[in-house]
View (tube, rainbow, N blue to C red):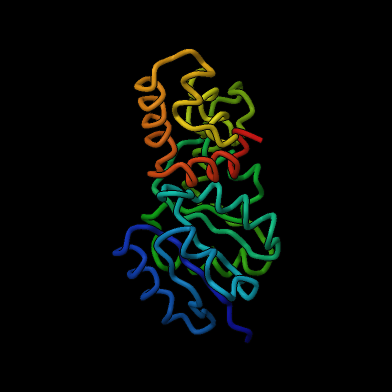
Length: 215
């Protein structure tokens, strides 16, 4: 039987190591990549050989949502299984709309996890009963979710400053353009860093582009 090549991306080292340890003992599974961030994963040379990517959602620099979007575009044959503590229905629905292949909560047992990996590797979808129940009991009148519903909520001023940052303007240039103080621009920049979970401008712009918040 052909082995299923697996990559695991999670910024919690204990979970990453524990999951890898559990799965490496399954006969037809082969752990090719373990990475503590999306960036580390994307820098690996053998991505095209991956059958199933197991990813968390909340991670620094690039989260599991942006990573899933990128993988679906660049490596459409890779199956994506989200394993996360996020139970928000809008997140789950948005990921389904992005055509991920499966979703489990992190408290799933080994048997369920093995079943999910095997199922998505065969080209089928896998959503645990806990996920299905959440979707069933969601208010049917709720607006159709999209990735926008789980993106950082920005004020009009924050988005304005983000767009100018992306154009390459300096803090002083932005202040002059918007007729606001240098201190105000710096304050908004720090808020943007916090909301996007990044610590430098290049990461901020890249994440905003990945999430299609700016063009």
